[in-house]
Image 1 (cartoon, helix red, strand yellow):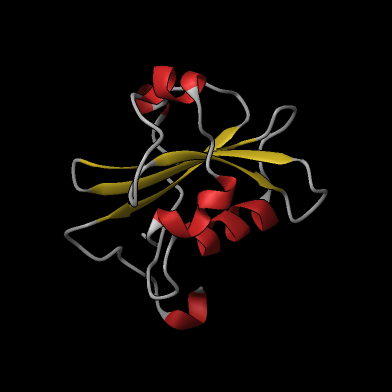
Image 2: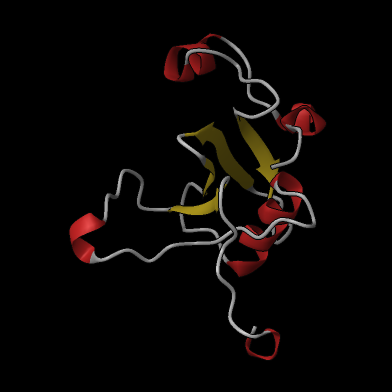
Length: 120
């Protein structure tokens, strides 16, 4: 994951953020509001780094983020040499806290398996 201080101009701050997350974040965690590259409306992004994983959640108020928005967030929060993934887990493992939220994940200790380059 990038140093999230590079994104401080988008970082959410204040009492509400501290109440929800315990702090305003640091180089590895934080909450952010960034304009969508599609329509300029707000993407709310929460980044965390815990238990061997980088995790970024992306949400919009009235719909789920689309491919262009997720790709934009991936490029802003992860380095160019890092692969991040979205997971489609079995229904029994699905937890839906916010209906318009999608996630990006990157494990710290192992590379993400990739299909042959011609397939990607």
